[in-house]
Length: 373
Image (cartoon, rainbow, N blue to C red; front, side, top):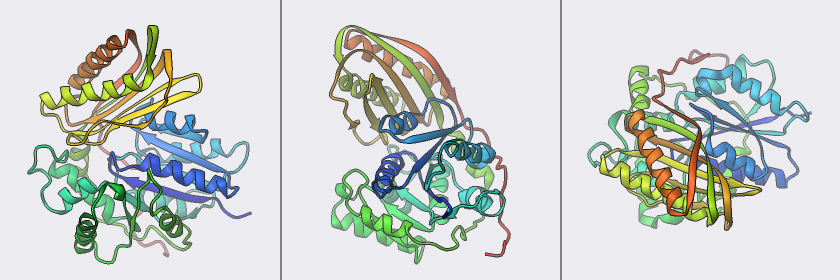
């Protein structure tokens, strides 16, 4: 039997990794392949995991640390997903603020992990607005950029180690903007292959599949990384995951609730000048689900997956990645979720909530020296 294909899709928070992973999963399943997905977060109750499972995918979650710092849990999760039937394809979505994945995940999988994988090229997604600001040199100058210089450092390091780069959301760009971003990438990362794609519409998706069809030795771009700057960049973000039971006296539109939660949070965070890296919420009830999100301080809330349903009860999961003290973020989330629920005649009961700053990355393995590749 052929070794399972291992495909990791990287990229900063809000780049569109989950939408891309879902589209890839549907593609491989349509070809008759068994697909397993592994998501990753610093805390439990990840919107992406709920969203992918709601779409019918086989999903395992590595929570509590990034893949690199919890490598053994990554491999154990893959093995649990393989318990009934070995997958043909494993799709992995790392934490959006994580880098150095070639040295700490791809190389250890190839040279330490006992089970063989057919490791495919490592692609990193970039959100065009972030790429234009950071690669164009304006990150940290625009208060609405959503990126400090230390966060921008992580963003650029993610691209530096990639086998190829994926410019996402091309459906929102003009030809001149696409050309400008490609020129910036070529200037800073000469010769790096570029895929132009919209994960939402599927435009350019066949090119991504073509890149991932390549076989060979990947993970060659081991880089120098200042772990102090990396740790400080991650620690600038307040990280919050929450799980809430919503109960209404009468039926309410689930999609209205989801978008209102994100809208209120955007306004509250803007009032305290807190830069948003990503906000996401999913509502679930008896087979129905909807997702709303905000991918930066300077964009509008989006209902990315509408549920089109009226409910009297729902499970609400809210994730927030914001440059703010986690305690303040928790207070704002509680306030705005309560207010949004009250607006539709419902009551919110917080069942679980975790708010934190990511700790310093301490990889389980880090292979930077030549290993016969």
